[in-house]
Image 1 (tube, one colour):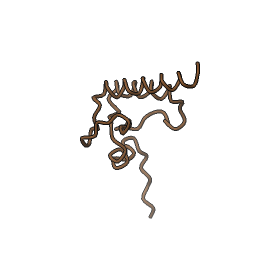
Image 2 (cartoon, rainbow, N blue to C red; image 1 turned 30 degrees about the horizontal axis):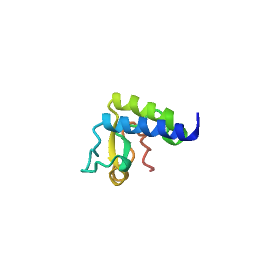
Image 3 (cartoon, rainbow, N blue to C red; image 1 turned 135 degrees about the horizontal axis):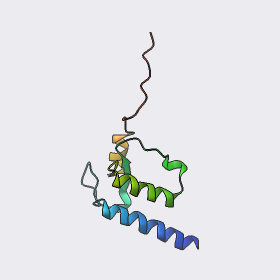
Image 4 (spheres, rainbow, N blue to C red; image 1 turned 30 degrees about the vertical axis):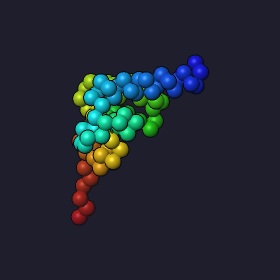
Length: 94
C-alpha cells in the first residue's frame, strides 16, 4: 500500500469515527473536525503514544463503544487533563 493511500485510509477512518461521535466538542461549541481530539474520561489500558495510528483508531472505536472517550477540542482536552479515576494514591509522608 502506498503512503498516500495509507494516509487517506487513516483520515477516512478518523473522520468516520468523529462523525459517529457527533462531531462536536463535549465541553464547548467547536465543530471543526481537524480541531477535535479524542479525550479519555477514564484511564485506558493502552498508551496512544506507543500505538500505531491505525490500531489507535480501532482502540478509540472500542473505547467509544465502552463509553470512556468523548470528543474535545485541543484547549478543552488540555484543560480537562488526564482522567483521575483508577489513579494510585500516594501515601502522605509523616
